[in-house]
Image 1 (cartoon, rainbow, N blue to C red):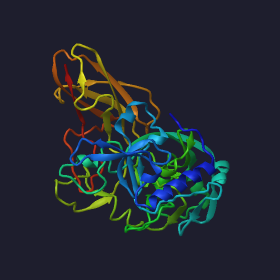
Image 2: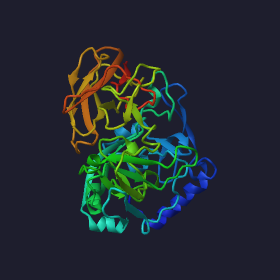
Image 3: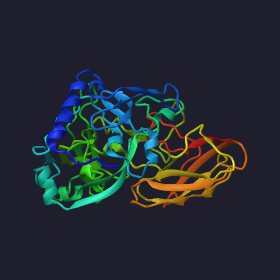
Image 4: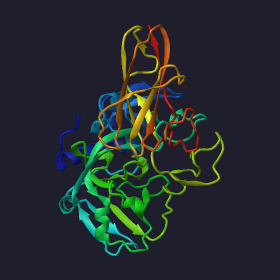
Length: 408
């Protein structure tokens, strides 16, 4: 399902409602009646609330809003509907009113030979539009499953989503800035502002990353304007990289001659600087690097832990897999807790950055518990670990998941 395009007037009204509720420290005034939901981990009771332009989502925090997609959504199709797409902010000062007709992106910096500004209409008319399907995943997706537990937003597996993004290539915009030979990194800033520590949310990409033709400045997802809470009117789309780089409400792009060391690049969003990006549980890394590309992941979406199925009946199971852009080569399936494996059937390929559907069928021959597991491999031969690795920030979890069902 995709939302119909909405006018800028409607957009500002929705944003105004968001701001009223934000002033209370909660968004309850702009939401539907709240219900409760139990996540499958310790202290997992969560509220389910409908924010502006959103169906009821799982609330991790309300100020700033961190909203998780209920996992059932991922069984409905490969594209995550706009009204179900997860939300992640770092600062409480989020924009509550944006006029797309006057919004400006400023481009410049010490490493740029030319500084200029772009309005949304100019972005759409002066550069070639490009469309891509890509997963956006929070760095801390599945953080609540880390053992021992770590600090930060305690999300289940739903702080991810897959969408069809429309925009222009960042490299085409940067070409107009005439980057100097001294240019080293590009920084990106949005309209959200810091209220409690951490400073302005600014992210950086190396020049070669920023010039990747897959990186977009996007104004549309799934055929409609970006929802306000997902970055209206324009956002950065960095396929294959964790969502921390997908800056929302993009307003400033600076080309710099050095390595940016703002808070949200250092010390925040760092991982252990080793092959597994991990350390022994409860220890601290000796060296770190900025978080980068996705790990390989796969999930069963059509079965829930504890679900009952019928003995002797054919059970068709569906799931999704994705990686950082190499593409999914194979998804192995086990119904006996990983003792034996077989291949699944891969469905439609929407692109190397997209969710890839897989299906498999089995017939439980006798009553009892079946431990269903899936393991995806990317086209470069990288798969998922059978044992979860640990890091103090709770990022990049991609262990083989287990769903236990009971045949009766």
